[in-house]
Structures are given as C-alpha cells and as structure tokens.
Length: 306
Image (cartoon, rainbow, N blue to C red; front, side):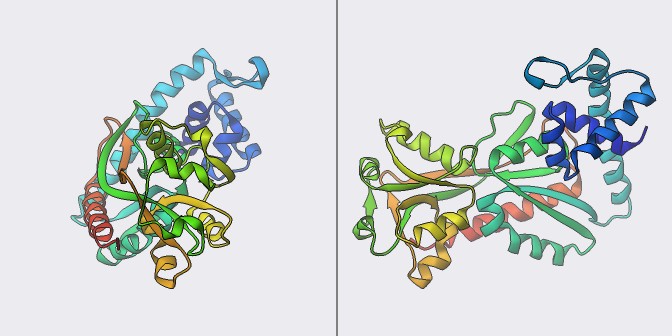
C-alpha cells in the first residue's frame, strides 16, 4: 500500500464519485480506478459499492474502516513532513493554497510572489475554483488552506475571518445605471443582470443581500451566468447589462474608463475567509503565510478607490 493509493482512496471516499475525485486530483478516471483497485487487491476486499441506486458510489463496511484510518494517516504524514523540515530552522516546503476566483485572480498573485521572494525555499501552488469547490478540496486534503469569499458551511472546516471586501454594481459608462452615485436594491430589478454561477461566493452574497432587502434573486432579470470575474467584466463592457462584483476586480477597468462601479445602498460588505481542516496541526509555514497574506490583503483592500 502506498501513500498515493491512500490519498486517491480518501478523495473518492470524500466525493463518493470516481469522476469528481479524478477532477480534484487532476488524474484520469481510469487512473483513479486503478489506484483503488490496487488497494482493494492489497486488502482482498471491496472498498466501494458501485451498485447503489442510480449509479451512486458508497463505501462498504471495510471502506468505512479504511476511511477513518486514512484520515489519521494522511494528517500525521503531513505533520511529520512539516515538523522534520522545520527542524532546520527555516521556513520551507510545499504550500498548496486554494482560492475563489476573485481572490485568486485579483488579490493573491502579487502576494504569493512577494511571499516567495521573502521565503525562497517555499514552493507555492495556487488552485483556483469557486468557494464551494475550494471547500471541497480542503476537506479532501488536496490543498492545505483555502481563501473563500463566503462563510463556510462545512462542520469539518475551521473558518476564520480574513478581511472585508465591498461588492458593487458595475456597468458600461453609457449604461442607464451609470449616472447613479448609489443604488437601492429595488433599482436592480429594472435592468438586465449578468450573474455569477451557483456556488460562487459573490452569487451567495448577492442572493442574501436581496433577501434581507425583502426581494428574491428570482426577481432579477438574469440574462447570463458566468464562472469568472474576468468574464463578467468582459460582458459588462459590451453594455449588455450590469453585474455585482468585488470593487477590487474592476480597478483596472475603472482606471481606463471601460467600467463604472456604483456602491449599493445599503453598502454590501462581505468578509473574506480562510478555511482549513478542523483540528488539524497548523505548521509554522502555514501560520507565517496566513499572517503575511492577511496583512497584505488588508493593505490592498484599504487602498481601493471609492
């Protein structure tokens, strides 16, 4: 039995899907199936029941037992690697960071570059996805820590507030909403809306904001859904409709005069969060990175133009 086989099994057990596990692990589905088959041959027992209704995958009793051990073994292996590397007194090692698209595209790249320059023996790896997918990868232990633009709903994860980010309405300078200095929620129902996809933290906060204002997301005139803030900006620039996005994601377009950002009334402020497995050891590398990144994010967002 190898550590890789155990990690593959653990991911399939978390996802209860060979297809989803292959996506998380960046492996082909046959490769995932082969690793699990090797493990089943090692223990001479089936670990998954693939015959459940509607093609669903479930753990067998033996799989349930192995899953519990896998959680502990993988956690201890990670702690061992970190402890031994830190005996040298240097901050070094691999750092697997996950981030939602807005944070990954507009906030973290410069911070990661600065962190690497400060600690050259660290090998950062950035995984990008929406908040929901990043939570899943943290739970699967395929990344060490995640930065998401919503609160975590997973009991197996610790969630810590990192910094605040303002969501604003964005549109083309000649779009009807562009003449307003601020926008009440009711005004948003009157124009074509370009939305982020389900699972996005921006989408979740938009839905909650409307609900607290006595409105429903279904009342919005949604003309398109997009899975990336850059794609959102590109469509908004055509004048098709308006969108709700992080102010930090349109600073360049504002400067060039391609997009106008309008504050909502009341303002929509969300707290960016970091998530990591509950009860898991946090290394000196991870603690240093969290402190470093939190400080830089606060500084970045505090300089945003009104």
